[in-house]
Image (cartoon, rainbow, N blue to C red; front, side, top):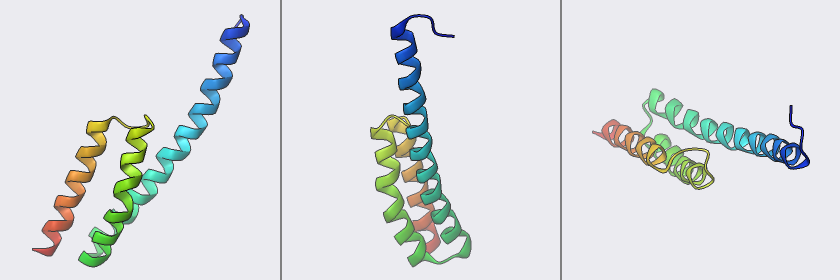
Amino acid sequence: MANTASAKKAARKIERRTEINGARKSRMRTFLKKVEEALASGDQKAASAALQAAQPEIMRAAQKGVLHKNTASRKVSRLSARVKALNA
């Protein structure tokens, strides 16, 4: 347990940030799930629309520190490749 005032404050800040980051990660996962469902259904138009909505959300998560920048880019790249392959 934190003993000093600064350590107690740091613990409070970490708790708040963890909650916010959890919400961001959950929101991002929801968008990813919509893309996955559209891909599974085989609907290229819906998959493309879902990816267009998910991409900014994934990149925002990276910008806010929830994901690493390269991880976010990799996710977007792989999803867009799958959507493109669905069309072919």
